[in-house]
Image (tube, rainbow, N blue to C red; front, side, top):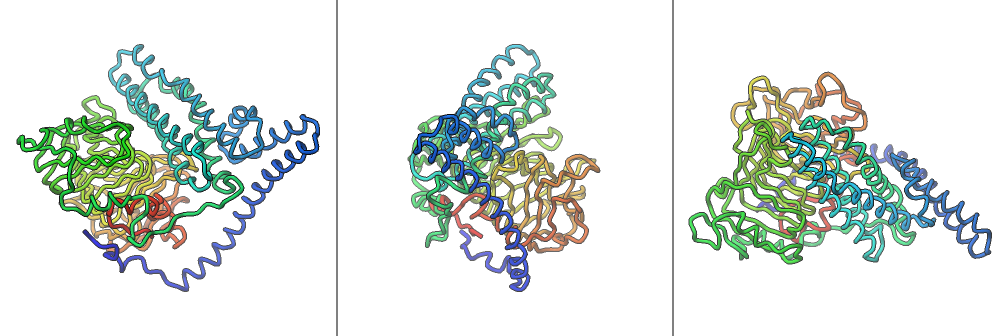
Length: 566
């Protein structure tokens, strides 16, 4: 295992440069802080005024007016102000925390109203692709409800909302991503009902966005008026605190004691990975360990949201292999092509290869899909061509992994950090270009993005196709490459490419590079997009490390996977 200090030489910053930047950024921070403070003072003033009215037994009309004013002020931070006000005007409260709680119930009600549409519409069509896309809708909408339930449980669980703001934003971001995934699947299938479904989902998508905005802009700032937002620091172990001590031990042990052993030759408890997964208890707080002995297991594994705290490990990359060949060309939606998929929280994978063998000619063919919150992937290999690794949603950390592919081969809308990884673009089909990343952030308040840090980007074998670091998939797409070695001779000097040819992406994206090395890291001829930073500042870069992007210090230490927080 590499030590935490194994990348010690990376990312040194010129002190004079950093000091100058801090002076400039301090002014911007002051302006932003004043704006937020004015909003906070407005809301607090409404609350205080309402209490004064109550205490002096003023007319109830004054209280009602104050409640309406509070809702309008809070909804002022959302993208969909009209739907926000209309859905929350009956909250009968001036307390921002209470109004936020009501907004969550509004989202839940809207999701329940559309829960049955996938099966209803599936019964009305004979189109196989449409049916498959609607099956995806059914799965991800169930996941959206689960993520929203986590949010509501946290709010009802007592304590201070601001202390759990990262969790709340993550789960609400996942709720929004799940709904977007449904629409993506329908568009991919060219479903005739796409516009009709989009209209049907209008309330649920807007309400989820509204709750996320309130959590980000109001709850995160004022919480319950008692405590500020505080991040837990790294412990003495050097690992984020969200990785439990027991999980650290499991990741350090050469061969952790398994609950079930998989061996194709019959020397284990079961012969297939699917049989082992069938033994996983539902929503268990205890760690369940699956050991998969050397060999190639041709299976498709889909572990749903109820599979909590599962660890699966093998005998090494290229030694223990789970492979499949589902693909889009043969009629499977991209979401469902994954050889291995996990949605339940707290997943750990170690010393394994996940592979999709469909080949470049089959287009979208996912090797691994993860929607697991607080999940860790250590010394794993993800091997395919187009859409290899689908980092779908929630918080994910990849350490010392290999990822190989052609088009958009790291994609999705998780908050995800890669450290010490080998990112390996490979030769695609003739007339195709290569894009390493395609990030899918749809909402400005989602705390998501792809961060490749202190890793290596170099081709797998001969690569002659035009190759780019990535392309923006959605309007707020966010991707950064930091302190990473980029090899010479394979990367187009522009570095990045638009999703639509010859059309610059919107200025709302955030793409950046920071202190990279290697001959491929020269940014002199990079794209000139408004949303691209060829030389990120230290403060900008700090938003995309383990500490900030995935709140690693609160959960990673327990897995005992080496990482650098900053």
